[in-house]
Length: 257
Image (cartoon, rainbow, N blue to C red; front, side):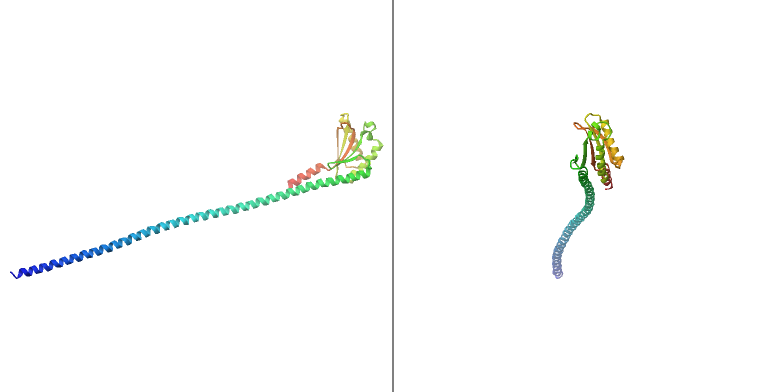
């Protein structure tokens, strides 16, 4: 019995020591595992943080891409609008230039007609001076040639409608001038100081009839009118451009343009 007790005590001591050693190893292993767990946790946390940062960067990049796409779309739209506007402006400019060219052509035509009228007036004046003589009462006013004589040159005492022979000779020469310039229009104006315009109109009509019947002047070219002569009594034969035909032509030219 005394031998068994020491042996039992030795076995118990060894067993206790083994248990203490295993406990220490377990504690050490537990610490090692805890350290590894902490390391893994930190790695996972870092990975999660990197993932969040990457996600934020990806979102930011996507936002920038969207903004660039919107900016490009806006720029393309503006470029298309600018191109359309430029095309419209070019078309408007071309239309304006075309209208200006038409207006210029119209003005050239009008100026040409006025120049032609002035040239005709000069020709008629030269012809009248040559045909009627330097002492003839012929003048030019604004492109209109005016041949005038007192009433008593045409009618006895300036009264009535019976033409004197001397006046018929003058009217024959005037008729030759008028027939030599068929494009010119003629206005015969009777003027007196009595205010009796019907009498002045009848005298102007007599002059017109003489030009037509005795001298072959186209009656459609002649207009007859009367007016108060103020302090003079006379017959005026005015040779001027055909204003009616001129304005009709100008109207047609403007309409066609």
